[in-house]
Image 1 (cartoon, rainbow, N blue to C red):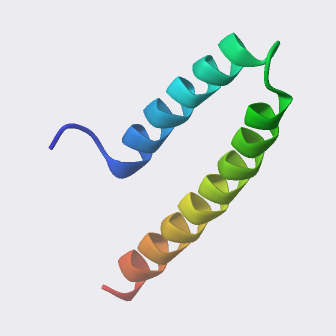
Image 2 (cartoon, rainbow, N blue to C red):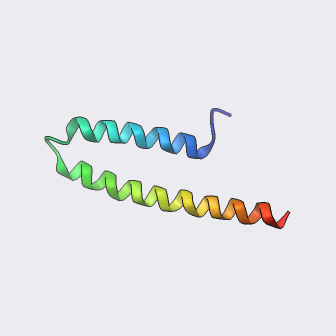
Length: 59
């Protein structure tokens, strides 16, 4: 496997952040959308972590 899901998500977010930073001067909208996406991804990853932890405790 080429890395865990959270590693791939973090790498994708880093690419998005880099792209947003490069274009921030011309498009504030990209920055706002990125922030919203990042929050949603963080929430999803936290939910997945919680689910995985729960599954681990039930074994």
